[in-house]
Length: 508
Image 1: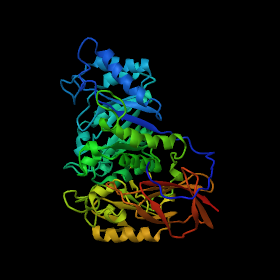
Image 2: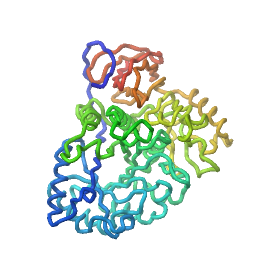
Image 3: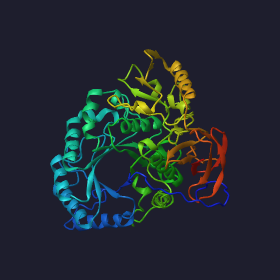
Image 4: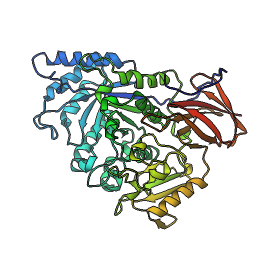
């Protein structure tokens, strides 16, 4: 069992009346039927639907589940010869509709579309209940997407017409054109504004992809900026065990389940409503297609917390741990030193914002950041700024920060950001861990604490104080109801932490 620390046995029950109705949606990657050779032979449909039915039977009771189906359609721009005919894709969709198997269809990646638009429309028509939308994997990687932007626009418009979701994942940073992440608005402002028009905020769901240690916290901050800035009504995480390998910690198969669990907890603490899981081996046992150990030990415990009501998705206004300082992204400057993690170096540069804002001294440490100043939100170039919830919103082109009609180069930017963050009041200050405070009721709050050390997380004594203007607070373990202690407003206290801890805060 994942540790939470030693507690005293005093039960407590809190009501969850009046909470918002945000729902969790989970998308599970699958081995494609073409890769498995299921599309060959006269009985291809029976074998394909039997395979998908087996997968579906394993996860159908999870929160709003769906399978992610990938085909390479013959003749599609990104598939060439491919391995699936249009009819096979459409017939598979019909089979899923008949069996009640919810699914998303992957239509593009860094490559051009793998499915033709006309085929997708037939899929929408053939599976009106079970096809929940489409999935895009890293089309902005190295700027590829701008070469087929009209195709992406057409897919987006089709989703709007048929009221389906366009779930879109991007990782951290890649490519000669700048950032292959959600900060790409800096590179092509006009193309970005066409793709991410606010009229489609109910269609596009941006996912922060965790397969790459570079610029993790900034990529997540840009997703939050899309959500808070009105570009996307929902957002989420693409939770990936690829991260372990890319961080240099070992083979993908060795990714500890607690790392996956902590990613999920982090996502929900910040209002994410979509989780996509990849690679397939973290979900399915090869050949038997039963659930794999990482699912059982990492994903399932998270789902149980959610299903039992111990955690729930906070609304925007209930998240109290956004930093009072935010950044508005501008057109990319001469360099991106402020956003460049330099993973080829042993440590992160001192002027790299997460180096000092999140205590990220090595680029591997960015997955679950320390949050002494809360979560830094990065608003894309065309986002609307909710001015009332931030003390300061500064502009940045990656090479400088602009504040009060002055420009600050990297070294001066560091001093500026730290001084503004220190001077600003915050409901929660945490030293040494990831900590988020969310509102649960008039005087009830939830403190999400997560160990930020991904590899071999040590036992921690986390220092924090809560500053909400009340006389004091009673702290309870959210999972057991046990009393932890009593603290005064702004009183600095130490909390023991192993992997994670959920603490209910009741104001006096």
